Image 1: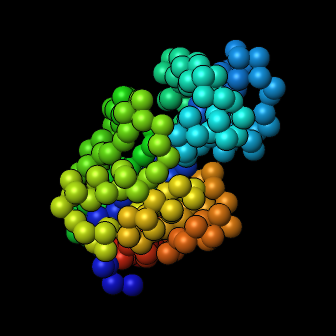
Image 2: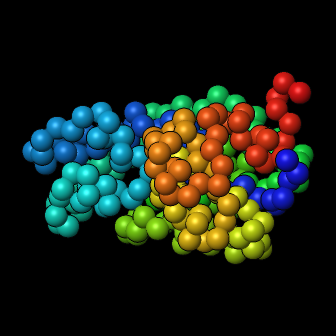
Length: 222
C-alpha cells in the first residue's frame, strides 16, 4: 500500500502502552474510599480511554459532585506512582523510531491530562518520538477526541486527509471520523473489535507490527 499520509496520530493508553493495571487500581482505590460497590475487572477496564468524569458518571453511576471527588481520589493514587504501572506494547518503540525514515511524523493525542502525560513521557523517555503532543487540562472533562485531533493537525500544519488516527476505543475512532481523518482501530487494547468496526474504523490492526503495512512501512522481518 503506498503511503498517503504525512503524520500518524497515536492515542496513548491501550495503544502505545498497556496502562490498565495502574488505571484500574486507581479507580478501585477511589471507589473504595467513597464506599462504592466494587466493580469487576472488565468493568474497570472501561475506564481506560475516555475522560475520568465520563467514566465515573457513566460506568460507576456517580453524580456530578461525587464524580469530582472520585477524580481527586483517583489522581491521588495514580499520581502517587500508579501512572508508571504500565507496559509499552512489544514492537511499538521500534515502529515509532522507524516513522521518520518513511516520511511520517508522529503526534500523541490523548485524553489523559497534560501533567500526567508529561510525567509518563519523561519517565519512559518517549517524548522524542512525537512532533506534537495534545492533551486536555485537568479541568477538561470532555471525551470528544476530535477536538484534540484538530489541535494536533493545526500544530502539524496538515489537513485531515494527510493524517491517520490510531486508537483502541470508540472514542478514538469517533473522534477521527468527526475530524475527517482515516483511522486504525487496534484490537490489542481495551476496546473490542466490534466497537471499533461499528464506530467506523478505516482499518484494523492486531499488533503494533500490523500497523506497518497500513502506514506504508515494510514489516520488521523484511
